[in-house]
Picture 1 (tube, rainbow, N blue to C red):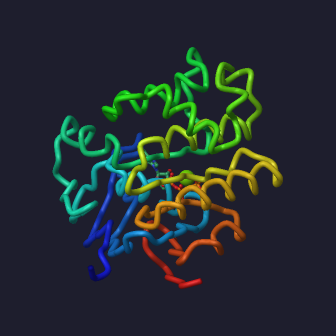
Picture 2 (picture 1 turned 90 degrees about the vertical axis):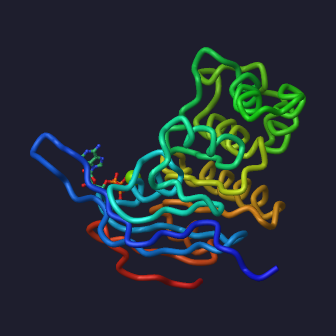
Length: 229
Ligand SMILES: Nc1ncnc2c1ncn2[C@@H]1O[C@H](COP(=O)(O)OP(=O)(O)OP(=O)(O)O)[C@@H](O)[C@H]1O
Ligand SMILES: [Mg+2]
C-alpha cells in the first residue's frame, strides 16, 4: 500500500473567546503526517503547539478548515461522535500526567481499556504496566508514585489499546533529565514496536525533537519551518 497520511490539515484556523475578546490562536495551518512516522511540534511558549495538538486529537474544534484524522473529517463532528472516534484509536499523554487520584495505577490503565471495549482490561492493564517497567507498582495510587512513575502509568494508559495515533504534550516537561530520558525511551520503544502507529509530540527538548522523523516549528500560531531530521 502506498504511503498514507494519518493526519491531514487544510487551512486550519482556531480562535477562542478570551476575556479581552477573540484571540487568534492558529492561522492557516496546512500539515500532513504520514502513517507510522513521528513528528515533533516545537516553538516558543504561546506559539500554539498545545492548541494544534488538541485540534488534531479531536479535543479542540477548529474554527475553520478541515481536519482529517485516520480518514475521517473530524472538523465538524459533534462531541459525542468525537468521543466515540477517539476511543481506542487515539492515545493522549499530558505534561501533568492527568491520572485519576482515587484509582490505583492498574485501575487508571484498565479504565481506559474498559472504555475502549477491551474484553480483559485488567490483564491487559497489568501487561502494559509491565511494558513500562511498573508491574510492581500496579496497586499504588498516583500520590504514592514519583513523577516519572506517574508519567509511565499515563503512557501505559495512552498506549494500552494500541491506538493508531499517540499525541503527547510535553511528556517530559515535568520530569528531571534522567526520568525524561526514560520516558522518551519508553515512548519510542513502544510506539516503534507498532510500525503503523503515528507519534505526534510537543516538546521543548531538542534531543527529543531530534529523535522524531520531522520537526514542525510554530511561531505566532503559524507554521514557520519544517525540518526533516
Ligand atoms: N482557552 C483559551 N482562550 C483564549 N486563549 C487561549 C486559550 N488557550 C490558549 N490560548 C492562547 O493561545 C495561544 C497558544 O496557546 P498554546 O497553549 O497552544 O501555546 P503553546 O505553544 O502550547 O505554549 P507553551 O509552550 O507555553 O505550552 C496563547 O497565546 C494562549 O494564551
Ligand atoms: Mg503548551
